[in-house]
Image (cartoon, rainbow, N blue to C red; front, side, top):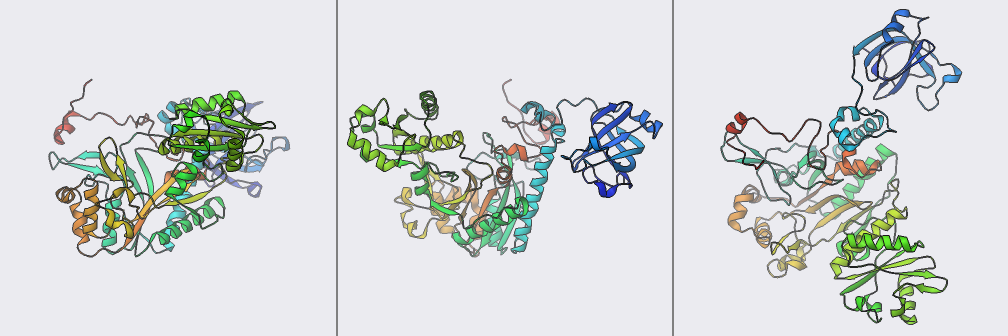
Length: 581
């Protein structure tokens, strides 16, 4: 071994021991002819000393060492002088006086700083990812991810699950996003798809008798990117037989309780709060509510309709949100502009003061209506009431966003607080206005609630599914459902979303065929592992916990992907490019 210890473990206990270290030269300082090098690996830093009075050859060899050169050093551990002790470092009490020095590789000056205090631009970090990953904060994040994955596997293993890998080259099936496709060389004109999720295969595994399956699965979707979305992401994927929604929700709560305890030392309180989809939309305007703070939406339609304010009278619904802060007029004007940029027709407001309610629109509301508003909203002195009037869906959308924005501005969204909830009883279908048809709200393999099955052909809008979403701090971590295990019912659901028997056989024939041979009641979830790890570390951009992410254009500046391929490869794959340059 080139090293006996790593660069983060030597302490005063090793004084007088001869050790070998290896790593990168983090910094080099020449103090009066004595060279001090901070030697770094992923475990930490150790100061090594090249003293000409101790060993002239070693000192001479170290005179030209630069940043990020890779070296190994052998020597004896000793106490640092008292005025050089660094209490901030685990190795800050000691140093190694070097007897043998070897330069393993030289290095060019790094294009970005390997210093957590100096963060380079996104483009530079992505292009030089191998340098960015040397930063202690990035190594800490990926080590945390590793520990989290081990805790997840430990929990599934002790609960009798079998880890089974599902294929990466699959049949293209409609699952909500665009597929990445792979041309087949041996089958001209045919393509594989990369899996958006292992959905069909885990259902097949239940039919196969593996009653408890899981994997940390790679999922690939060709969709527009954002902070919590990448072309490929890792999913905690699992499926269970002979269970209902409560069984699965309880199991997942146990998973997160174990995960947080093992990695953060936090005891999560269970069970998590449960909201119906209707409750979440009514109170928070969004189906992934952030429960770290209150500020619920309040329906005041019946009150304000009695006022002389025609803007409110003309709309379907008026809802209000109360901010417990005395915003200045400039701040209010800024929020009005923000609301309009986020889909609002406008944002009305009223401020509660010593003199009562103040606003440019107060003159349209008599004292009795003002009194009723204060009673309904429970607004107090120093609070500001914000109103949005529009159709119900638009009101929910704008106020849901505004609630989160106010929570951020008022410092109510601490990254150190973890507030989970479940959202259940989602509509099974939603209407696609552009295509003038029904589509599955989550996916078409979700079972409708038993009492709603009879509504499939006549009232799809009234059907609720056996669906459940896990939400943490306003972020959806994952979705799950009890699956359809009856081929006749599956075809009826497919027919609602426009897939007739012939199309169903063409797209999902292998699943429908498998159903014929006895399928258990089963359900499961796909939980975003990247999102989980990011939120646990107080981050919102999942790229910070992915070793080699893509940028916002789905490109990798480091390796240059996606890239063109040679004409020979295109010919072998029976494809040709026809792209305007």
